[in-house]
Amino acid sequence: MHTVTQPTPPIEACGGALRIHRIAAASDNLVWIAVCVETGAAAVIDGPSAAEALAACEAEEITLSAVWNTHTHDDHIGINRDLQRLGRLEGLEVIGPALVADAVPGLTCGVDEGDEVRLGALTAQVLRTEGHVDGHVSYLLGDALFCGDTLFTGGCGYLFDGPPDKMYRSLMRLAELPGETLVCCAHEYTQDNLRFAWSVEPDNPALAQRIRAVWAIRSAGGCVVPSTLEEERATNPFLRPGSPSLIQRVAAASAQLGPAPTPSEVFAATRALKDTGAHQALADSSLPLADSSLPLADSSLPLAGL
Image: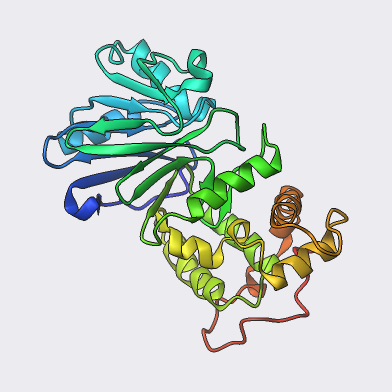
């Protein structure tokens, strides 16, 4: 069963010129279908398989014109293989990262930093956002950012290829986008990410408020993706390497940080700490869930169970 069990209505972006459908697939993947309202042109962005997207297109009377891939992990290009097997990839424009073009099934146009992609009357900017894997790209379509596995709601992707500084620079670049930008990432990982965030920055009132809101929606099977970049800048630990509280707590749990770490070094140590999975031992009873009037910081909280 997918982690999201409640229906998710379409999202409007670009002042109503773009309609975005959020499709649940596999156990936690989010497949995006972006539709130009003026022309009806539609692109499906990433996905582990085709069935879910095709069912949504049939239900919503959407005719796909393109597939956009952010990177080449199986749960992002599986949809290409499925469409190819079904004989439905031919005739579609398949856009994907040029740096790994040979690994994108059915690719018709490789793109990289600075390129533009048309979707009907709309134009998306291509950003190279490596760090998760080499060649990873994101698509900025007006105020909607389709960022694959680079930036997550409350977190960021694993560093399969890295190095950490490359991912840090990708994230900082995305963090500079306007605050209203929608973060349309490829997985619903928000609760795990925010549990870790609270373990390293439990004096952040914006984070406490976000945790309460997210837990309420997720407990009913709802989806909290997309977020906004304003929300991510305020609560996502991987966009907050300058937070004194975060630095102090990460340093206490990590031998990686010296007395005057650079922001990139803080990011690397923070990512390495999350990779241990120790934050998963932080019980819900230690999160700011029960009463919004409770103190938002408690110095006695254990650091992710360490």
